[in-house]
Length: 312
Image (tube, rainbow, N blue to C red):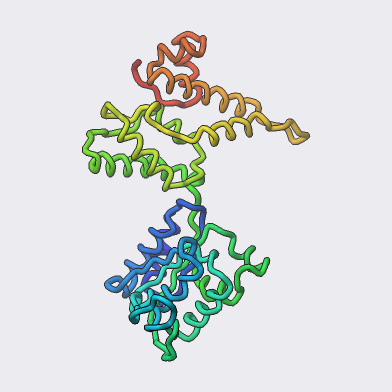
């Protein structure tokens, strides 16, 4: 992420178009806004265009505006989003969802910096910076001829890739604490920290929804928590994801290259200990009972696995 921040600072002041790739929920729109704030256009409009959520029959009139009488219901002239964004930045979210017809029109706007309103004849000049994003593999879409190659190259002058949260281990505690403080203030609760056991659960989770999912999990946890610390039982994680992770570990086949049996058994042991602590609401005495082991044995296992402990 430091590389991403550095790139934002370097590319912000330029006029170059930026293409942001990454899974859903990684924060692509936040990066687009940060680039806009670092640019000379920061005092002008930042217009978000959701390409996936805009009906195909409306997108052209929304982008370019229309003239009175252009179609049934066009009682007056209407400005398009390009008019609104003039002098600022346009952010095309999920740009891979644009239809071929709109791709052609968008390419012309990028190349010529002009457009014509629906039902109009006069060309209008526009000065906007283009930032686009998608969770699709757009290069693959180009190869399959689902997305225009020339448009892709026009949009992808500078590429910013947002890594998924599961590849950002060091960011997880920082982000979790940030969201904890944010929603504690918004909801009006005095939840100050996340317990070590709850954090261990979060670290074991794969976050298919990335940072957006983490934010939702922490918001729910703060809303449900009755103490000043987030405990494991307040976390709402996807059971399907947890079961799939468990099944994937169990299906590791022994090959000629071998496996690390201690690592696999350690993962299984950690998972059962975390689950027992979750069911025991953090009580190590009860967790040991659920696992059928002594307190001394549980303490030894916690220490062996490097799991932070606290007095029962």
